[in-house]
Image (cartoon, rainbow, N blue to C red):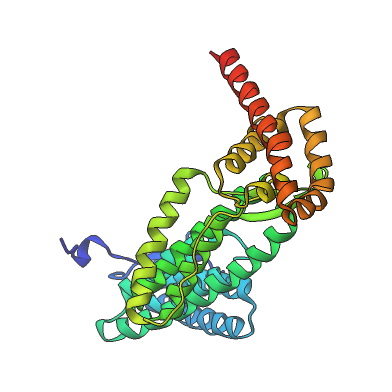
Length: 343
C-alpha cells in the first residue's frame, strides 16, 4: 500500500546557524532549531542539506577513484543519511565496502546488500546497466579476495582455526559470485571462478605440520559441507559447459597424505589396506605420544623405503607379508579394543 505524503511530512534539513541536522515539516515556513534555538527558514534549510549531499557525493566519487575506499565509504554513508533513496550512493557504498574488505566476509555481504538496494531504487531504464556493472565489480572483488585468501591459507594453514576461517571467507566469496552470476548469467569468468573455488576447497590443502614433526597433513572439508559444495560445483559446471563446451573442468578430488610403504606395496593409494591404515593413522595414532613419534619417524624414513620397494617385485612381496599384513592386523586389534572400551 502506498503511504500518502500527509503521513510523512518531515524531510532532512540543515540549520544555517549551527549546521545541526534536522528533520523539519515541509509544510511549515519557519521552525526552531532543536540545537541552537534560532528560527530556521525551512526551504533554506532543505536547500542547504541538499547542497551538502551533493558535496559529499562528489567527495565520495573522488575518494573512490583514488582507491581510498574507507573514505569513500564514509562519504557515501553521509549522503545516505541525507538521501536514503539515492541509488548511486547505495551502489558506491557497496562498491567501497567490497573493495575495502581485506578478507572480511562481513564487507562482502554488505556489498551484496547495498548493491541490491541500489538496483531496487534505480529507475527502470538504468537497472540493466547497473546490473552489468554490479556483475563486473562483484566478480573483481571476489577474485581479489580469493587470491588473497589462498595466499594467506598457504602460509598459515597449520595455525589453529585458520582452515575454518578460510572456508567461511570462501563461502562468502562464492555467495558474492553467485549474486554476480544472477546479474550477468552469460559471464563465463564468473562461472569459472565459482567452479575453481569449489574444486580447491573440496580437494583440501596439504602441508607439513610442524606440531607433528613436519609430517604431511591434509585439511579437508567435513562430509556435509563437501556434499554442499559438490552440489554448487555441479550446478555451475553445467552452466559453464553449456556456454563454453570446450572448457576443461577441474576434477575436485580430495588430496591425500599417502602411507608411502603401504602404497608402494599395494600399488595404489586407493587400495583398501592403504585407506584403512591412513584412517587409523589420522584417528588413532595421532592421539598418543608414541603414535606421534612413530609418524615422525615414518615420514622421515618411509619415502626411501617406498622407493626401494617400488623397484622390486620380491621387495613388494616381502613388504606385504612382513609389513602390510601385520600392520593391518595390529591396527584392527587396536581399533576393535578402542571401540570395546567406548561401549
